Amino acid sequence: MGCTSSAASDRPSKNDPLLDPPPPQELDPRIPLTARQKFSIQKSWKAIQRNMEGVGMDIFIRLFKAHPEYQDLFPEFKGMSEEKLRNSINFETHVGIFMNVIDECIDSLEDADHVINLLTKKGRKHANYGVKPEFISDIEEPFLASVKQLLEDRYSEKIEEIYKLTIKFILEHFINGLKESVG
Ligand code: HEM
Image 1 (tube, rainbow, N blue to C red):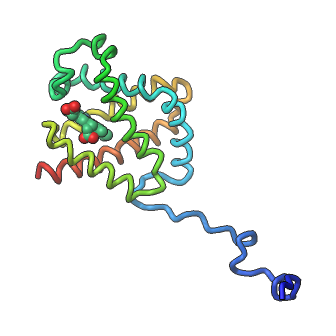
Image 2 (cartoon, rainbow, N blue to C red; image 1 turned 180 degrees about the vertical axis):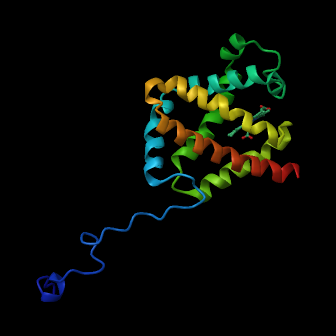
Image 3 (tube, rainbow, N blue to C red; image 1 turned 30 degrees about the horizontal axis):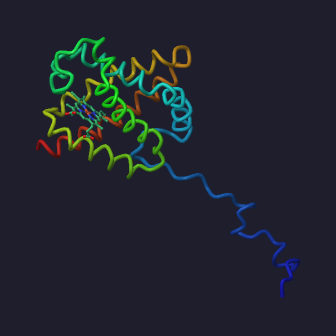
């Protein structure tokens, strides 16, 4: 009773977590990143997290400059200059909500079901805002340009590729949700 030094317990056991660390989690083919790429973007994203509001505002200012008609879809932002937008609490709130969705996706890349459900749900809701599926990829450029501007020389070619893969993945599932709604 209570004896731990038997020959049997000294023998390496198949289930001993010290001898047999759990195998690395299998990659989910729905997530287009390797484990190393996930680690890299989550690490890089920390710099964005410290500047969520600035980066989010920059993304939407760029989007509205390239597509002024998209600004008109937001009743509260219609006709506002860049300066007015930057000083608007409503704009700040909206970019905060947008960035939180992107943040949750990047934070949860280990859980494809969660990310895909979230994006499908959010995409679906956009049918109520007059947003068409073909509008959505227009946010890719503003997103990448704003991340690049913030990261400066930390935006290497390698991390750029990872951001591209990630935003394409995010937008793809968002568009799928929106398409479900608009048919
Ligand atoms: C991945 C891309 C996008 C994400 C994650 C996103 C996220 C959001 C979120 C979280 C909201 C708040 C309401 C809700 O939860 O449904 C929202 C509202 C809205 N979004 Fe997006 N959005 C994206 C792309 C776009 C694009 C490209 C446009 C315009 C072409 C757009 C136009 C709108 C409009 C018009 C509203 C409603 C605003 C209001 O009436 O207050 N969104 N978006």
